[in-house]
Each structure stands twice: as C-alpha cells, then as structure tokens.
Length: 423
Image 1 (cartoon, rainbow, N blue to C red):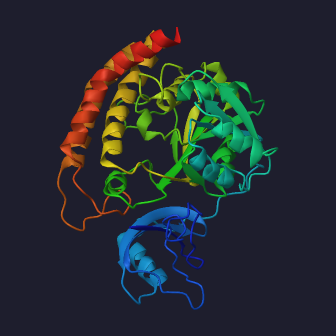
Image 2: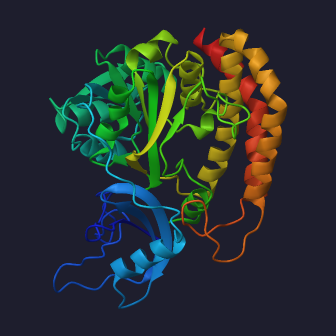
Image 3: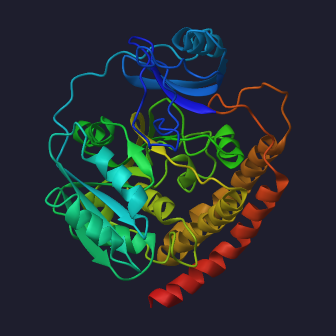
C-alpha cells in the first residue's frame, strides 16, 4: 500500500521525500497531484496520515479507485473512521517560549546510504538553534566518516565510538554536547520539518519535564512484514498528548513506571541533558549491538521517571520510520523486543535494587494485563476491520509471540553477558 500525508485544511500533500524508488516515485508516498499532462495516480490501497491545520490527528486506510479524486476519497474515509467526534480538530497550541538550544545525536553503523536520507531531513528543521552530531559506532569501513566529511562538511559533527552498542554510542553523544537538551533519532528515519521544535518545546513549558517522546509512522508499507507490524501499532503511541508523572501514576498502567514501552521509542526522544546525566545516562550493557539486544531507551525512560522527572509524549513531533522489510527481520525484531524488555528490567533492578520491592508489588497485575493484551493481539478479526492506526488488521502470528516470550527468557542472561563484556 502507498503512504500519503493529508491536511484537511489544505490541499493533499506529498509528505516527506522519503526515498526515490526504481520507478522514480518518491519513497512510497502517493503522488495524488500529478504534474500537468502526467499519468493519473494508480488505484490501490493508501495509508494516509491526516492532519488538521498541520497537526497530526489520525490515520486512515482506504482504496482509491481509478478516476476518483484521491483527496475526496481520503477525506471521506477519515470522517467515516472518526465519526462522532472521536478525533475532533484540536485548537492551536498556546504561544510558547522559543525552542531551547538542542543537539541532535544520530548513532549509526555501516549504513551510510540510509544515514544521508536522515541527515537531509534533520538539516531542514525549522528549529532556530540546534546542531546535528553523528556517532559512528564501531565502524568497519570509513564510509560514514567520508559521507559526513564530504557531503555534510561544516554542517554535521562527527564522533567515532569504537565500543559497539547503541547505548554506548548515545552516551558518547551525550558527553560531547554542551546543549541543555539532547535529542536522539535513528539513521532509518525521515524527520518532519517541525519535528525538533515540537519535541523540545515542552521543556520550555515545564521545568519538571525530563524527557519528551514523539510520534513514529511508517515511511513505507510495501512488504507483508511492514504491513503486519504497522497493523498492530508499529512504533506509534497514539495521537493524543500524554503526560507521565511519577507523582500521579496512571490507573490503566499497573506496572507504571516500569511500562516503559508505552512511553515512546528511541527513534524519537529528547532529554534534559542534566536529568539524563544525573541518572548515569544510558546503561551501556543494554541496546542494539550488545548481547542484551535492546532496552537502552526503556531503561533511560524509567530512570528519568524514578528520579522524579515528568515524561511527555507529543504526536506533533513526527518522524517517518523505514520498517524492516522481511519476515526474518520481523522474527528477529520480535525476539529482540522480548529480550530488551527483560534486559532493561534486569538493568533497573541490578543498578538500583531499591526499586525491586515496587516492581515485585506491581508484577502480578502487570503480568495479567500483558496476557490480556497478547490474547487480544493474536485474536483473528473480521476482514476489513480497522487496525490500530487504520491499517487492515491481521492476526498476530503465534510464532512471533513465542519468539517474543523466548526473548523475554533470554533477556536477563543477555544483560549479564553484556555487563561482563563492559567490565
């Protein structure tokens, strides 16, 4: 299916320039306004982000028939999906202070082709005061250094980190910045031009905010694995702003603040640098590139919250993520998520044993809640039923759930191996 970007107060937009495909089309984004004299847009399934006055409010999935006006079809689908005021236009936000000075850290390893696409979007931000730094993590070739020193000379900073691991690379970026705020994203995203401004504005509004996360949507939905992942939520955390406050735990999260997976993802997060440094930064024994397989972002979320800071989620801070494309990628991802989940919990307990009683007290209700969510995700749905973000719902394969559970069993061992390696 194609990916599009629709603003109901404006004409249909092509969205970000995600990539150029072999047929010359722009990155899977549906061209719904062809050039004069050009061929009409192809009919087919379209997954569209819907904005109201520029602000993301929801997604829809529909089919644009041959000869139909794509904007009219998508608008009608949006109104039908959100009938009854489920997604009303949100008013313009109140005036805010200028976004604070920020450093954007992009950790990468041997993916210079993808990195260039991400850097182009980061250099096009409307934020008034920021810089971008690439951390080259345990490189095998000089490709990343060559790219930054050539195409992005004078515009992007470069740091070499010889020790493998995403958390280590993030800590290297954190140590090298003097900005009061630091944002992190991945080399496989395209950032919306307003991303950094929206991600850092909450810090100026609330001095208790220690972390902000944002919305992650798919850049492409061209393979069954990508469609399956997105039909079960992908990386998005919804279209309503949320505040996670340790002083007011939410009733619908029995394991709070240990439900870090609901707060956001590492591809779209920012921290008050002083708050992140005060909790020791990221645990170097977690994250991609270590035996723990993941959990570095989740560990940081929990530590910032347990230190008394607030965490805010804002859907206005949008990045487009290139999901993994193959079935084997999805299998590896499921196992890695399970491993990262228990690895980060092990890290929290090992490094901060005073939090163990609170975790054990919340565990029974949390496990029951997790089992209910898993059963709901695996249940078959009627054809055409809407998924979490407008995609066609497909039953989550039990083999992926089994892999995720196997990863959970491995996570503590993986973390122990990673800790030994870091020592």
